[in-house]
Amino acid sequence: MAPPTGPGRFTRFVRRASSEGKLVVQPRMGFGTVEQMRAGLDAVRIVDAATVGTITVDSYTRVNDHASALLALEKGADLNGFPLVAHGAAATRELLAGIAGDDFPVQVRHGSALPGALFEGLVAAGIDATEGGPVSYCLPYSRVPLAQAVDAWAECCEMLAGTSEPVHLESFGGCMLGQLCPPSLLISLSILEGLFFREHGLRDISVSYAQQTNQQQDLEAIHALRALAKEWLGDTDWHAVLYTYMGVYPRTRQGAYRLLEESARLAARSGTERLIVKTAVEASRIPSITENVDALERAARAAEREAVAEPAGIPDSGIYEEAQAIITHTLTLGSDVGKALVRAFALGHLDIPFCLHQDNANRCRARIDDRGRLTWADPAGVPIPRARALPGNRQRLTARGLLDMLSYNERRYDHPPRTSHPR
Image 1 (cartoon, helix red, strand yellow):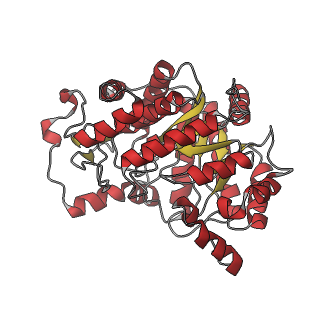
Image 2 (spheres, rainbow, N blue to C red):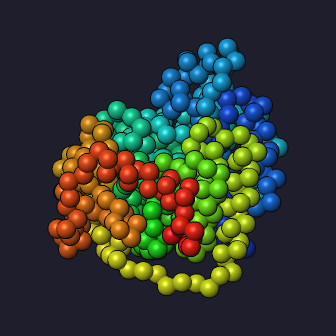
């Protein structure tokens, strides 16, 4: 079978919305039964915004425990997502019938380091898109050796590349651990995973970045991500996706709405094509369909208001140069991207702060400075220009200091200064 050419349905939809000046908004939604999942997709489809559907899989499917997922279905137990493999391709096709189409593509989101069975199921069901990556779905979520995950993802990419219609694949590299990872490292991982996808035959991809702690820094980071994607992935069909903050979330509805709307404004200002939203109840429980719809509508309206605002200048603190240095150096470490990734982590030249996976050195550190910017406290072996690692930043991190950083956005959006909007 000849590999598909041109963008698939998912990317065509995103491009069309972008050409019309609309931000595509997307939930992170998954339910256990076909009936619940169909109700969720139906509700998202009719939102007054440019929306794409999401099927988020459950925890059993994420770790390939499909027998437990099937048993849970048989017992009528609640699941925290849709067990696609346990339901099977026929049931998933039935779920999508009359819903998924050119005007409403659907993406499977999962979190699996070894996604072979899941990818077989989504391909058989005719799914439009999925996401993850050999690093971004291994180190944060599993104990699977990185080399094993790289091999598994290579096979899965080649599986997607062999389909008759293009399947979109989104890197989760811009969301490592959700927080406290310097922007240049997030950008590097997203581009490197994009290069890995391309190396294994895919040409329909997206690169990602997660909102962090300072809007101006995030604006710079997204522009750097887009510039690097154009340079390194210019022969693919790519777009950028922004995640509403993935760390400790505000506990109040007002704080959650402020943070969500800030992410939508950031997406609009930076030219990001797609936004993954979070709801007002993220800090306490799995959101309902209604709460997901509310988040989508709020994000879309905030983006529309920002789109007519005066454009602002893009700051330059060296994020682009740092990311370019990390990417370029990593690619020298192996004969292909997968080998280079494994070698870079083994040497500590790629290193995720506070990540406890056995293949991560966990020597580098980040901090939030007095302007709310996420900066390097100690890059350790990460090959950024040394001038970026200011000696004054190298401070001993205490447990209290770490907890304060983790709750930084929670505090400032739940209790913003009365005289200013949180930035």
